[in-house]
Image (tube, rainbow, N blue to C red; front, side, top):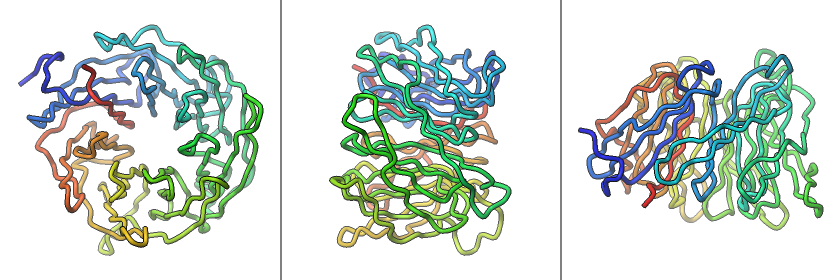
Length: 366
């Protein structure tokens, strides 16, 4: 069954970023009809190579994507793409590109005030910052924060590999988990409009390979998923000082699993009761319960992603649905969240998307 796009049954719009050549489909828009648990493919777009991570401004007027390439027009570095979105049809308008000045950009984020956009260059050992104009367009890059060093894993930590850049809830700090350095680098906004500087470097366990970072809705805690050690680490957070306090780390894998695995994404539920992380190899979502009294996390189970290599997943803003993207099996899978246990339960719906690697979810527009 296909429901018309203007149906009141439509609750969420879903944007999927994917690997592929510039002339292939790398952006797909889906719709989730929450009353029927149905995903419907609404539009497909080419024009951007390897659209591996997506973000959208709050008003829904502009979509941002990284083009995760080694070089652009013969010069080293990928690109930041910016698309206007037509509010009535949701069609993407003409793309605007900016160089990121670093190879293989793999993540981007918007500051809470939407005045800055940060791009992490995995093989460029850097984070590039773009100021956002009043009409939501990125300006050309104005700051590049460069990392140096290495870690103990000679194959994966031979150099810095910034894998994300996440702004604090008040927008005064930026947190960069660097997989190659086993550190979370912290940057502080300066008094000048275009000023960011180093604030702190938080050491992780040797060989952890920190990948992605997520704040608790309270703003008093944060979590890192470690790609190489397959653990989730909890931090306390002091907003005034921009300070992280490292707490416990817990494995993302069941004790019975003996195969190869790397972790990818981490998401905190909107109600702050659960943390989710994806396993690539075990091909699962690991669920952690947050203790109300202590804030500590404890393992609460695993759910198969019904595919191979779940690089990314996302929760709907109401916390009722989870959508997982399996890169190597070309499918996007829908789960309903059981409210008491937090466990994702397969909703009987999946849809084919070639090499999906990012899921962006937004409330449907009325």
